[in-house]
Image (cartoon, rainbow, N blue to C red; front, top):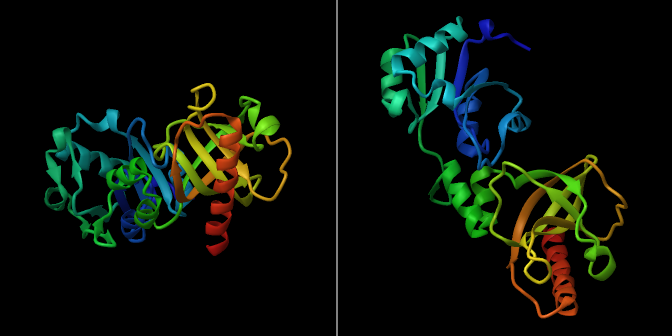
Length: 270
């Protein structure tokens, strides 16, 4: 891996989601400088590096928020002594109270500054906050369009209620942290277990028919995966229905059967 003192070009941004607009920046640089904040991520922390082959360097926002634009550029030059090129988006802001913008960076940095223009998908400007809004609405189709891939989360398998296997269908219950979760409801998904992507149907939300607790759980279609431990990944393919309360477990089981059939049809078409 190249050391910082050999890197000549960097792209700067939050890169939360590594969406299609981020990719336009990344492809023009040797390394990316990620401004890290706290909470509500599309891709938390180091997991951004899973979506790029470029070197990832992290600055925590709280550590640099008080720097003036001039001091921020000075820090970049100190950290990357061979720096010749900086790539940013058209709406890039930096320095204390966002005092600097992309044009200001061009004035302060004595090398090349490449400003990437707005990127759109289906007429919608691509931003992490827009993707989060679509997820909150359950609009997986548009969220995935802006991402350029299916939205992923991961979690650790934990013990569930015990109802699924006995009374309904077997599910893996996941403990998920730090991610921006989609709207409560049921989704056609794919689940990655030990490196294998398997068709699945997943629920996230409050179990309003049973104990009211919040859960993220996934049912693998057409395969018994047995006992699973450790980390599991989910990718969201399509929104099926909203979370709702049923009159009893029989009614819920019937609905789950319909959810499975619908998810299977959608996934078979992909």
